[in-house]
Image 1 (cartoon, rainbow, N blue to C red):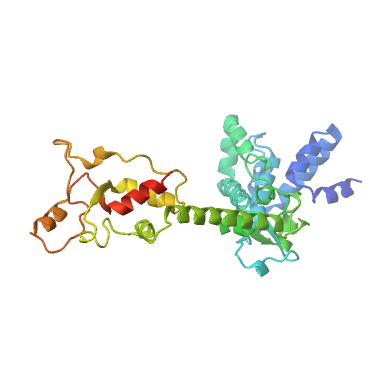
Image 2 (image 1 turned 180 degrees about the horizontal axis):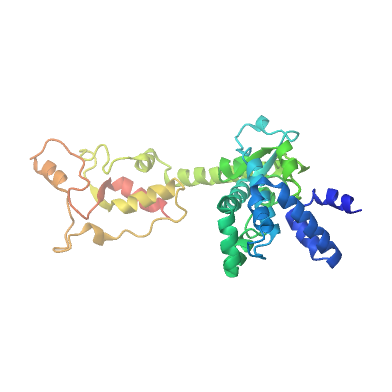
Length: 345
């Protein structure tokens, strides 16, 4: 019976052994015998055997052997997670019969805790002795290496599950690196530590079609709204040219046909263009004339390049942005200006 218990106990994790040791005193003795045997068989924990066999060394009670077994398990988990790779847009790369889909946050958080355990194992007898002398520090280390709970590691599949309880489509995820794939053969080795079903083993690794259809319908509705707004605010060729204009002044600024122009703040024009193109949801507010007036004389500010051109001192109209510090303006013809105001609700 004792041999059978040891044979079965080898397949249990350190967390399961801890739960069994708390059931009864009889099981606690069996667990202690099994843990001592596992510690002797582990090459990474050879320093624990040296401290125990040495009669001159103090009998250190902390930290317990189960914590060191947990470190060995985390080191083993890290060696398996090395095979995890980011999931690409190629649907044929991940086959349900060969790979499982995991959340990237799950893989990264597991690796982070595994690094802590690996550092502790590298310190060896030094860490064992220091934690035994200072019980408070040992408690902190034990808490850091406690079973991987929800507050430390996100659920294996919940972060990849859509509202329809299916696998969220990759095209609707915030990034292609938010999920990773792991070979099915490697995940079967991790299954004793994470018995929850994942996509590819217990859950269907097929993207939700309802989410794709809903996303397409939402995109069509948004595009229809953008088109309707653009046609409403740019119903004429003149307004359409004003919307797509990349310069601060119209091409025919000094045309003899229309000689009346309005001085409009550049900031207001940019907001109106963004609203017309549905880049902003809120329409532009009223035009603040104070942005166009000189702070000292309360008169309209005319850029130097435009003033020189009007007076005949210059033969070309150069880009005047920045010619007057603190003022950014644009010229709009009277017809364009009236239509822009009328189209703004």
